Image 1 (cartoon, rainbow, N blue to C red):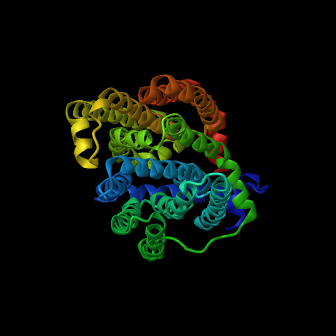
Image 2 (cartoon, rainbow, N blue to C red):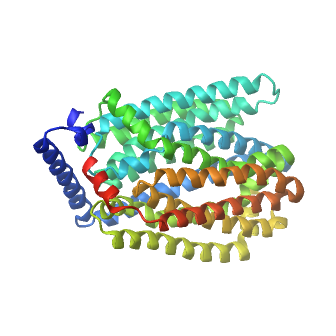
Image 3 (cartoon, helix red, strand yellow):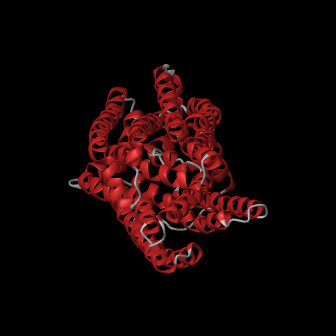
Length: 457
């Protein structure tokens, strides 16, 4: 990556600055042309929907494989609880691998950083992610005779794919080819999910299932992303220290926010594991599924619009920018109504049928979690909006306040009200986060700051 790409704002020569600005404008126009081409939006929605659906169903399918593997109900629920705990801790460290660069990457429509710099940054963060999980697993397994942390270490091998492939997904989206990214992501998750589930069904061994799945998924990842990427962008990393440092610094508030956001999702799980045990944690994982459906339905509509939203903001079209945000929130509200109605009528019987364990006594908790899922989906949309506006410090403050609330409230409510307490704690923290995001969006941003950022980018 050239010096001009990373330091356009600091060039003393006015003509060079003008050339950099013109280059950025050309990149924006090229992206807009790709986005507005005939049929592109339809392909983007189709394959993004397929990938999002597969991603949302992956944990469900793997959970069903555990619950329906022929073990007793009590043992299966305990195993699923252990799997859920391992997944939660793996996802907590996955935020380190992702470093929340995606939002910055796909909205970097003026190509301040090239793909090679984003790729080398991701290699670094994924290496740190694996090291942290290995350290956590080794330390914890020294005091816990139950192989919970062995499972965590094994599952971490699979979470690395989610963290690493994201850099390719983001570059395809930034280039106006979300459809290619969706196809590759669908193929990768489909392979990982069904291969792992089938292997576990027959072996009843998490470690063996994970190792075999890891090897096969490596091949699928190279084929699904590497081959189509050759015709769109360079695949070579660019170990530009200045560029890598720039990305890490720019995304630091987003990373901290993402880490705290993951903690918001994990806080009730950790509280249930500590106060109620693995069996109840397994039940919570089951009744949490409808909340996932709301996120899935909302992001089906909103995620393909993310680059368009960034373009509208970069062009100063605030009205169109806010219109896209409103569309996402309206979609979330509609998804909440549909999912809440279905959950109330057939939610418990359907989950019992799918997972083979009775959850009819948790209808109230189900409805609270559906509300929490809607609030979470709204928060994600508002988060994307604030990130596009580069209100990163505001995002960080909101997550810090919500994280502190979850840390205090989740254990207390879970101890006093069991599963309902954990559900209420999750809903309360998601509601607080959404309210804080709205409040920060309503605070005016000086126009001069926006224009300065556009020139710098």
